[in-house]
Length: 251
Image (cartoon, rainbow, N blue to C red; front, top):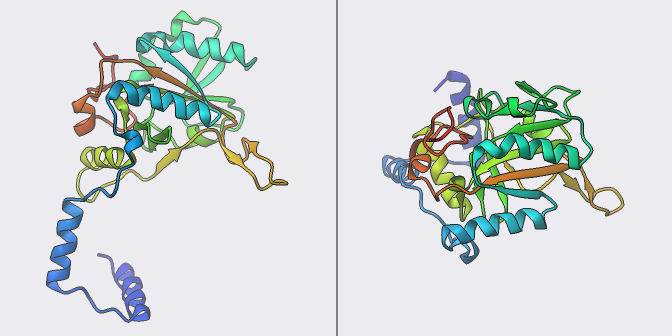
């Protein structure tokens, strides 16, 4: 621990009139961190996985997001092009710089302009993956990293998220458990964002306004793959489109 950090923590302990934790307290804390226990999990998310996918779609729609169910990841480029056309949006997307998204057949959409990298001010639409989908509330868990620039989640007005069914879990506790398994003890991504519907606020005359602090549209492409993939739960890369943690398309 750095000297400056020790100084800050020491000042906090003195202000709280707390001493250094005893050896027994430290042991108990380390045991709790090593084996975190879930709290009370609502029954709504505790259902068969196929029903969790239906619940994920239902909750997303209730939150003013739109959802399209796909049979295969190769259908993503066509679905993106259809969405942009249907919303009368420019045929241009900023793609998360990931191998699995890059490997999709974008060339089948010659009128669609696809660029990669962090979002920039002129960008209108981002296409990203997600670390997990939480059916309980229709929430997307996004873990930042080199292949998942955080600006893609917030800067463009339109956010398209590619989510595999195998990434959908019932409750928040399951998503956090996956994250801990993926990154290991004492490690976390720099940022973990929970996205529950398009950005909104009721601060302006108590009227809900979309797009106040982020995208005004959230569109989820939910791929109906075989089911929950245990490899993804134990070691897939953050925000991976593929359940096996690879960068290329899933066989």
